[in-house]
Image: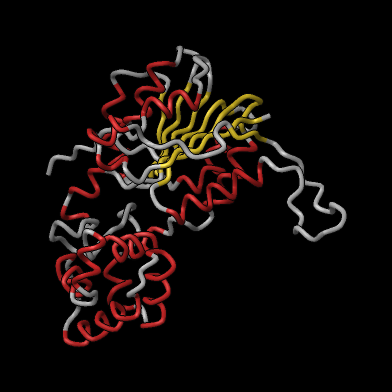
Length: 314
């Protein structure tokens, strides 16, 4: 099967403006994907500049590295989760040398549109959802092996699914007859667990539950706060970090991480005297998240939930 990771990068102009590219700078794209954002960053860099791409999806790394090989000499890539960025920074000795960091927390078009990857409730495929297919743990394990309480917890916490109990109950009942193997089988269970009027008001039945299982499979929220803190503190003075989020859970983590980095004291509110000795290391470039323009919303439906936050090292 031919792999094509290219897709429309979300809020491209806003990301480039937010990063305020230094032609001689060092940049890390923590979620390389098809390289839509990275390609435009590289086009703005001189021969002295450098861009490092990270991605946990081996298909993405291979596709984009091959695509860039003939075009750019100042690009390198690593097959790793961006939460391992500290290892890359250490390996390349980039402490306090970064001019910019980009993290796009969205799922790629290729992953969603490829049935065999098992991300989509619209396409029938195996229950997979692994961004890194070298890991063994997949959506199949979550759906077929998690206890009722575990299923309820992830559906409610990661999907904010108000029918988590009914969906979990019906998953348990179905898998007692035979294993749940495909995205269509799971989608059918979800659809029969939610009242039709609710499905109609939502515009669909499956998004919340599929999101929750995907987050669990890929540990998407784990250590997100910590890696933001680490990368922000390794920006040069004036260096910038831009993060694109696509649902409220991850945006809340990013918002809180940015707020703490930009605040002088993070002691509990009722502490009479500051004991944390915390000092702001960044300033917020945009106090409120930047949203996609109406023009982009018309041309790229996947930008509809996107929020962009940008900070600058001080």
